[in-house]
Image 1 (cartoon, rainbow, N blue to C red):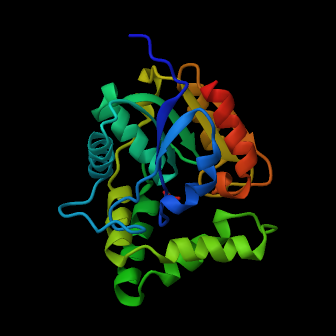
Image 2 (image 1 turned 90 degrees about the vertical axis):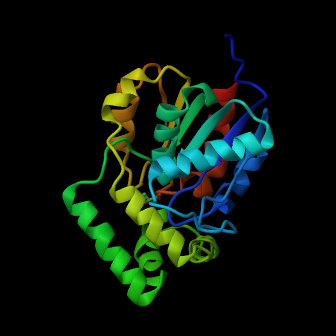
Image 3 (image 1 turned 45 degrees about the horizontal axis):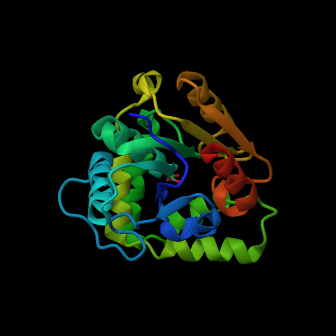
Length: 244
Ligand code: MLT
């Protein structure tokens, strides 16, 4: 089947602990319909039931497309959203027309990272989400980002529910490694990374770009983890070139 990427739908999947609000500047991207759900427990979405997993979010994403009558979309995921993109591409290959992987990685958590996730869960249970938000905020934007933007991102993060944050930490800790999956990806793929992203680094992005056949890599100057927020014009231009 010949699938034309132009004028397609893009399903935007946000990172942790954020909401669809982080993609508001991406609505300006021409040539596509934008679908931007809040993941369960984040933004305005109620928490999900059952054992949390990245696959559960992928099923949620596909059900969201079902409800809108969209058969195929380009799946765009930032960080945790990227983990969900890999799961969706694995579980629902017929629904994924393309991939836009923003500030994410294919590898699973190290033992140490998993341990930290479970420590964070205990912290959220004791103290709420503010300590987790405060420790992540400095990695989201570069130091020189306007204070207003930092405050705005903090507000988006603080809109997450405790249940949602705990579920996502558990899901990320238990996620599978997608390394072996990368060479099997056959849809057009764009990889975007902030040059100063300390969470999912340019080295992570280069490794994915080398492993995914025909992937295009764009590094964004003056951006940390939320490249699409801090440098939205550059990210939007990269997406428009990819769609074109
Ligand atoms: C995210 O932005 O989604 C998270 O930082 C990802 C992670 O903690 O692995």
